[in-house]
Image 1 (cartoon, one colour):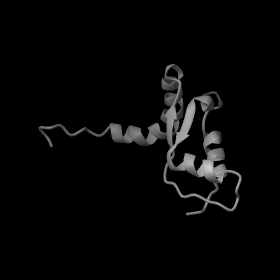
Image 2 (cartoon, helix red, strand yellow):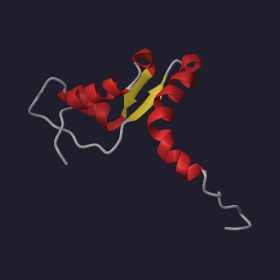
Image 3 (cartoon, one colour):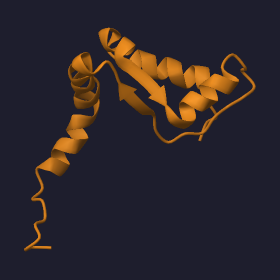
Length: 91
């Protein structure tokens, strides 16, 4: 795993998000903490396996979440959704 600075990770996230959705995304969790404490310090790196985020405000968030999540991840999820879901009877 290549060490990345919090600034580099946030830049990658910003580049991956549709520009009009960026104001609706709030990064939380370990990445937010790393950015808070180490932003601007090129000597500090973080390790994270994911990005925890919330979408706000609620009225715009649903549309923004769909634009952010569905295009990059739905191809992977779609293959899982096509599988039959287990039921209590088949369990």
